[in-house]
Image (tube, rainbow, N blue to C red; front, side, top):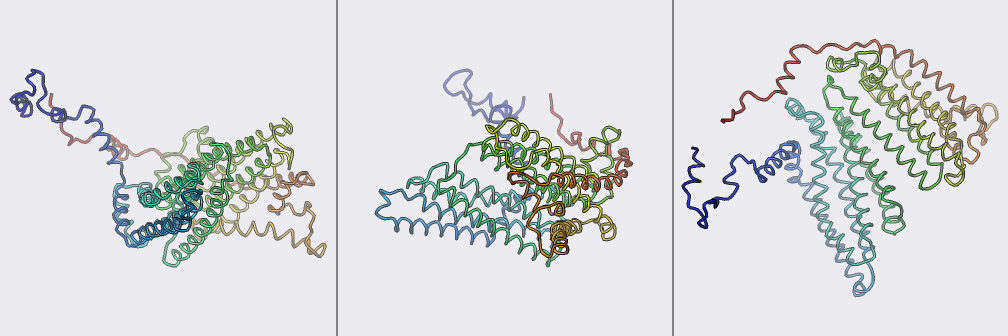
Length: 550
């Protein structure tokens, strides 16, 4: 008989009943198999999932002078604005609705704290780890690159929650003063939170790019400029549209764009983790899966906007944004390294069928190029099918403005194939000479986009003496003017321009396909026996675990 059982039997009974319990239920359940034991184990699992980086960053940030000054200024500014507002409206504040005016001030105070300080602190936090050499100490631990980056992001989210806790009572005060609805307050808070999350995650990506004091300073100045632009843009929209009660729409109409913005948070965090991950790891598959999910979400958003507004121009806008998105991401992918580590080769598809379907998810500039163009083309075709349904249904569904959707697919696909193919062909010898880097294809892409607009203007001056104001076949490379013509009521005229752009793009892409035979020649390598044994040891329970007694 154990000691706990002997103490339980020797203890006096409460109430005189033979089955009375002399101790609380927790004392009679040392193994934790009851309800409270399950809750305790669940809490332990949740605590074990907490990132140690979050604990470290929370201790450092909450004790830092920057956080103390910012939080103190937030409290002082909110209290001062409350006093100023009450005094300014007194004694009419008892009778007239004044919550909207006070809400404007609280929004400015909250947005400055959330958008200006949190992203900059996150940028310096991760950049300092990489610059001061402390990241190597984290890299030798069992923490993955994703957990390190997510720990930095969670620390920033903790600061956001603290700022919100200081300003929420003021927002409730605005609601009690009348003049502003609860949904308006909620939408304002959500917009500030989502914008701050996107800027903070983007700041973490920029911090992984900085490899030196000079580049860190340059990127920090660029981040400050982006923060100022976001602050003014968000303030103009919220103060004029949201707080002005000019916004309307359905729940899905607001949920889809907000979800689309949050998807960029996941993309930026994955990109930051890929930047600091070891070169032997597969750093591309997760990013490409997120990109595919973003395209699906974008198609749903555009189709819903077209159905709700009955404007087919949203289909055209959606295709243009898909072209821009995959051109930008494809340009970055062209800077990936061609060398594949043995760990990546162990995951490579083995059969011919799986190579045709799954090779494009694996690292490499060639596989990334095929993933970009195939995914973009599939998305355009889906959107064109939705647009053709509305086009053929008549004016009750959408209004017939702009070029037909099928022509838009040919136009945007031609631009994507042509410009992205030229970027890869021109950057390949430079990358071979200077090593893999995303800066080289970005510079090549910017030069090509600029020349695409400038060269037709030069030919106009040579042949006519001035820049022509009439669109013609000569301006086919001018992507900006061509996209503007596609929004006109008659669409692009002449129609031959669309097919010329498509055929030129297909020709350039054919040259790139010739260079993709290397991807089909890559063979999967077997996993060494030592690695399999280590993986089995990691999955098996520890030998030092205590053996339960019957």
